[in-house]
Length: 114
Length: 159
Figure: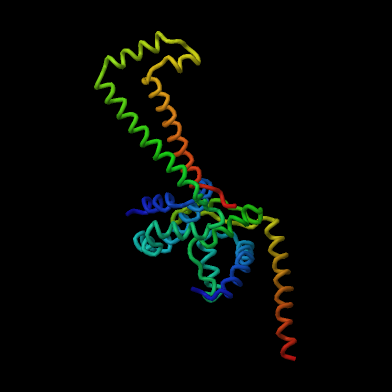
């Protein structure tokens, strides 16, 4: 069992990171998982299915759209998620919120150091 | 077990509305396809994901906000269904015995119905034979309602 505090923090930022990755480049669920793991030194190592509720929530809110990619000779068609305009805007908005949040939280620790 | 069978088994164990099952399975299939394309064999993939039961349980856990809730009242419905089923079986057996035991009894009762009054008075005129069929209808109705209730209450939407 993972530490509860870390788990809650991860849960809070996961949706934001998913939207960020999808906004950069349309991607499918499994690739999203591999990217999250690779870009976080394994901090975000998820089980298959962990992302589904997040993806469906984002899709239902109109932030992302799913479509089936054409399969090429070697690869089969895949369900690709891409960010909508609304999603792109939301991505920037969320990053703004995150930066403020980060600054505020860090502020507490700076005060103590002085 | 081949992959198709595996996926069917997982799907069957998902405890959620059909549209959501489709949604989950499309992403699940996509992940498996990606694994296959990266060179993993089907056996290795199934090994990694675990038994269909385990895989479905994990998916249900992840999708907790969307899965069905099982109402405890379903047991009441099941009890009603079982009870009326037993009554039905008992009555049926009784009726069958009566019929075998005395055919003239049945013949007499059907004459009673044909010759008897229609409408409310029929209740008084008709003999045990038709009382039996009224009870039959009631028990069948109760049993059907009980079974229906049981399955409906097993799939309650989350609050």
